[in-house]
Image 1 (cartoon, one colour):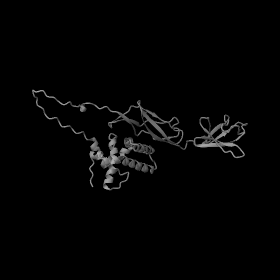
Image 2: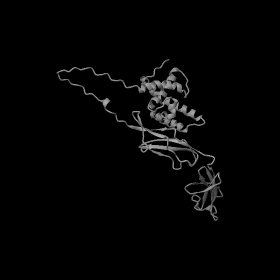
Image 3: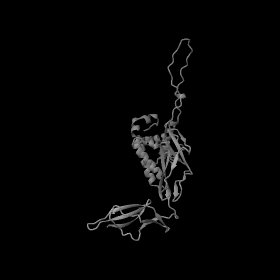
Image 4: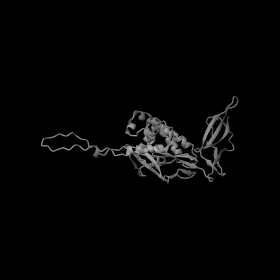
Length: 325
């Protein structure tokens, strides 16, 4: 069976009806494949998951920022984000063609999608049809009336800002060591318009904000880019090094006259308590009351009223018992 890829396909009700499911299935397959990699790109996984949720809520355009990623387009053999919406259609049409031909294709059948994309790009990049020239008219002495004409070709349409997209260049740093400071180099912010065009925003016009405690502990940090009312974000990874001291434990000390008894077990006097964090290099750091949290758990019995007080700091904790006076 031969299926011709043309504009009629995009307008077909079956295509419109199944478009959401086609794209979501494709993104889910890409997430599964990325999770199997040793160096899985969690930024890409998060973007795909967010796009799936938005698409299922009716916002199909949410797939555009994902497909506009530089590494995603390179898989399709395309080096520009100009036709990002065309790429969304490519994915959907590819799945439709697979179903129409009875072929079972994997999520990474990029050769197949690339062939379809060539046809789609031709459709989306072809010049608009040149209107036929009006018939020649001859001058007549009689008065003639002419129909009012619109001058759309000479009136520039007003473009509405639609969102922002991020491009990451070779200078972009996606992994940091504990203690490093965030580096915004290599990030390009694109302003997207409703006519599918885009412009590069000047660095002075948008804000890149990393968490205030960026790089303090190993894990993933979310960095947010904002421009006017638009927002986009990405994650970077924080790694420990051999030289990075690791938090191993926490302990509390009390004044010599502290007897671990209280008249009110819900409001225990802890003003004299000192809390210290211990690290793998044997160094210790005294913590302030804002650094740690205190939890009180009632462990009273029929014969005795008492609670366990737990002091927590990041991933470690210590506990002690306070009895009713």
